[in-house]
Length: 178
Image 1 (cartoon, one colour):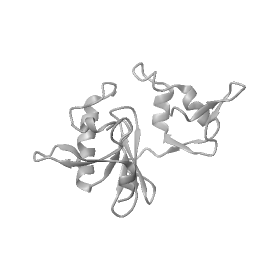
Image 2: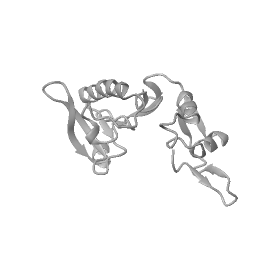
Image 3: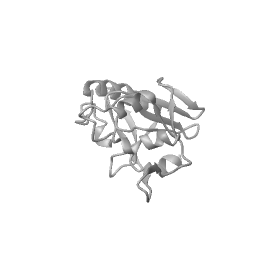
Image 4: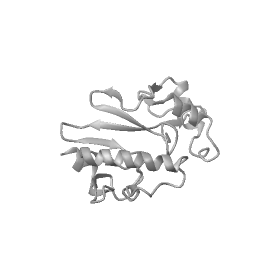
């Protein structure tokens, strides 16, 4: 949520984009509001409480595959942090793009054993990654990566043993033009 709030001249914190609507689950908000020692540095109240106070923060139901609208579904993940959202966006009949968030932060994390050191439940992450990447590969979806300095998007395939691996590295523009 960094960058969603700005400090005004009088020191008050307000939404940086007052006309935007921000979305999360109530479970994730509560988790962020009272973070564990491991995540305390990631969940700074000054980055999200002003959004709730300004009535621009909204909550979606916590249900897997929640259908936001006909082209957007929300997947949820619990290994990295509690109730992390992974938006699945249908671009057109042939292209679906998923914001992989911190479940798959970079192309280097596609290999199943490669899990970030600050995931709160690494074995849950492993289970989630296995199911998620298998589904993505089978359906031909693309992943948008938030922490990869060299690769914006990837497609995934299953190797001869059924393990996920990077198929193609693409720019976001290349995915959107398909």
